[in-house]
Image: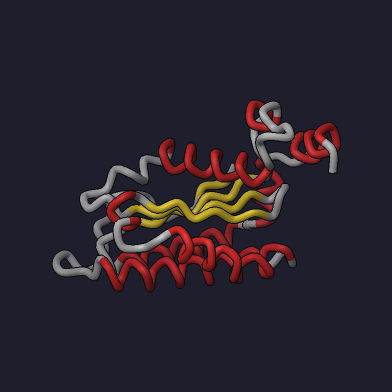
Length: 175
């Protein structure tokens, strides 16, 4: 797909497409799963689903900057914007789904990345890829949440304050 076609694809999709992909009942189930997950470890997990990339990102796409790099850059930006880095043990995680590209990114804070290498995060996203490619967003996000939870439980189990730290909202962000 060339750059103008890709830009049109992203212009065509908006926040209403994210709300159709993740309807209110699914949003509620994902929020409950996130809250249950956070009761098992001291980390914080946020889910963010965006229909398309902002035009400012798309203008940067050329032969030196791939779409995968742009999606990753956007995920890192959302990690920062949602203040996921602002956790006591630097163990926040963003599960980012980009609908136009059917791409997933997992962005983890430095405290967790001391224990988990990039190859483990890449393997997780690869396993989830088929669910997202097939439009089974809830299955893919639930799988992502389960795998991230397992990593957090292994490295940051709850020692005190069972029931989660309650620092960040549990509801997924749609855009």
